[in-house]
Length: 371
Image (cartoon, rainbow, N blue to C red; front, side, top):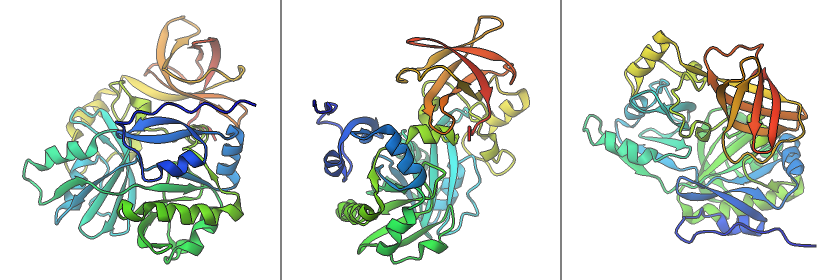
């Protein structure tokens, strides 16, 4: 029986502290995320990974998920200026999801904001140079804040058995740690921040070792504790994320997409304090977005690997009305699902054809999240 072929790796791309551990667990393919390798594909049955996520527990190396750190008396005030969602009342130990946009209201990143200490805020961000962007803005001198990329490489424990694995290792009481809260504690003697967050809507936590020196020790302790719970080391589960309507900035790559077109209007505080891109987004709100984000379902046989955006055609006119920007197989619905950016005039009753590299797929609108 032939062995699976591992992707070749470039020596110039940085690795997380857990890189050698993921090799031992069968990592085969990586994406470059924040200039760092992130493992996405392992030598596992994809359905087994999905089932572990939904009914068991998984461990992910997300050390590529970098932390833009703001430190100083104006840390929270500065973070609030950068984010289109109000952060001014975020307490110590609080977390919050927010997108980020540029001065034109175009989406840059989706982040989890953490305030682990009184004078420290972390933007735990998707694939964009947030630290460099924030450093440039801080140089304007309006804020008493220091900006840096923190030496913090997180990993995630996701799935309904996540607390069963972590609780015996952690000094803090995880049972009392509410959703979107974080705590400074020790895990197997390693100083960490643990947040009740993650790139899924399952029960789960993100573990942030404070400094990479103890990161592998923390990883190993969790991996060992997880054996009795059949913990599976995997990459982020794209199938489950799309089912739950959790996307990523990569959905918006090269799209010129503003936050309202991305369907993120519910997370914006357009009538509050000033922030980067506020005036541009207010203008879009008045004029109406040109495009919108929709979900699609298709009953065709499982479609090809999604390696590039696919055209979406309206069946009535035969014209292209959008681009499919994410497409996966849904194990929960047992059908293909996709997310597309389409013309604002597209209606919920319209019928479409997705043009993939291997053929055409009939599709209909479906609410997001899909389940």
